[in-house]
Length: 345
Image (cartoon, rainbow, N blue to C red; front, side):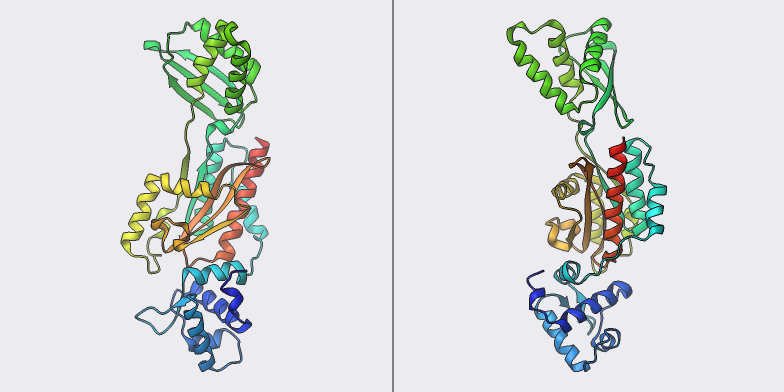
């Protein structure tokens, strides 16, 4: 339980829950009179005002300058999510929609692209998905095509159906027969392994061979080191325009800053990577992320992967005034479906 929440009695917790639920639904500061009607508590308006003042002293609600009502703070939302929120599992209809609209038989990029779009569609906010490095997937087959100028086209086919083309420039020109021999060696001995596993085995064989390193192994190590270079991370984003008109106090400059962050991706990717080893859903509310562009917004994430190995993180970015009891199950279920699909790849 949140440390602040432990200091709240049952009435204060009930009023905080009622205030946040009403604010999420209506988007307007909640006054004592309105709260006395909606909370269902048999207490006087004066008592409610006193409790509201206590909640404000704890930093859980604040009074905008233009209104006598109160709105939740980031800390108030945190108490709400951690100890007051009544979570409901995703309904069968929405689960069916996820299963129906996620192309689980498609190649991984198509599956993840659909996931970001569907997260946005179902929550009306921004769907984000970090894309695994290709090195995280076992490769099925490799082929080399010689090009002009000593360059070589590398065609990598992965077990999830993705095909990746890379152009490399080896240290020396290779004849087509040499490239065919290298491809045959890699396909016969390393198919079904991840690229990091291939690197490890090649290095071990190189050490085992020592001075007796044969010509084929030498050529394979040289070409493979370039062909299997780390491709880096990427992130898919869908539904950015859903945030327009939903600032809820976040000014236009902050929204512009967030849109620029979507374009740069690097900082958001680092934030998603921090969530990669979370035990299930992780939630950043407002300034909790330490990422200024997300002040005034919340990020709900869940990792996805195969056999206890995390491959990436997906989530939703929206205003702090979001229906967490709906967004969290959507994110959680999407991560589970993606993980199941990748296990079958």
